[in-house]
Image (cartoon, rainbow, N blue to C red; front, side):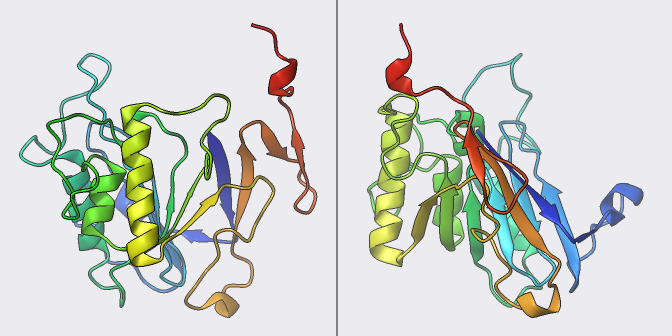
Length: 235
């Protein structure tokens, strides 16, 4: 799990105050935060004040009810397809239909998508489409950040089918699309920056707070590890 926050932003609350109305297009200077409810996991689409875009998670869990709700808006498409369609619609007035950043908070199926054999296969034939891998099939993206890159072994090796599929997805995009993949760094405020007109919004920043037990101290980019060394733990 990881955490971050925005500062120096004017958040668009229009959608909350105008229930039942069509959500307005993004406009310069506004921070739009869209919580996308597919019924099968978490997904947040963000348009920053200069039009830089970010997706946080794209869940597609296969858990049965009652731990999850019915799929929304319906089951005619997969969660990854619904998320992609929503994002592309909200990006319709942006000059670029590309996700500048993808941030994955952790690797549960309701945040990145569960693996299942019946899922569609990517056009490349190298990975299954579920959750984030399906969104990445429909929408180009430049940079992906998660808590495990590059070894995915904290606090223990992640070697199930879901993670193998996810890592194959990363490998393909890095090789074919020059996608940048990084590990989230606690304390940093430069891992996610405005890309289109940064000078116009000097007070805007995204501050990384915590990841894998490392927590920002609140001073500069300093962080402190709150977890004991794994080799010191007894089972």
